[in-house]
Image (cartoon, rainbow over all chains, first blue to last red; front, side, top):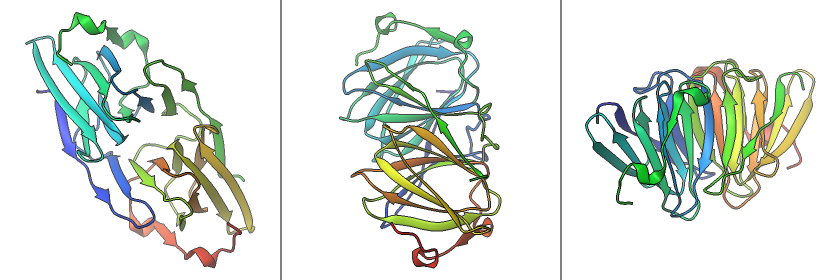
Length: 135
Length: 135
């Protein structure tokens, strides 16, 4: 999908506790820093749908396992990926795409490195059943 | 301590999983975005000491509990704070201070929103016993 980038991330092993890369400003997909926040998601719960008209999202899952589904309403295409420490990648989503995500593990947390600060005027929301996807 | 800022952060309750604020670019203590990474720290292990000569660190603990100790080698002062979801604050450390941290909980992860990308030439390292602190 055009506005979606998956970037494998490095885990640096350390006997006192591993280091997990997330993003450098020189990385592909970086579109400026506006805000960083964590979102936890309970197992089998789904948050979404939301479409940002300006924000680029850069999402990393340091804890648990989360399934992400991106929907392109211009052509009706879906893209999905499940991220965790085992599949440790950064998911970049440019503005203009719908996103929903589901908790897979027992404790699941994502970090979003958003390109702009939260602004409710640039977010469209839809109920889960308004975009039909077989979760 | 002059170059250290503690900022209480908001946790937004949500029945599908809470949201944990970390940093906005308009926040006090933000000094530019260079790199974001996670560091895990095993219970009772201590990572440190390190002193950055250019990087400002902005640290948040979304998982577990971590004790941070900052040492100012100009006047011999220590500052310490233990962060967790229960004491959910952002720890800003400007360049020029020594930092070490200890895992307190069973699973502990910090996020560092660093003002510059990693550059080993701006980091001084010292062994744990070179700066005497009663852990």
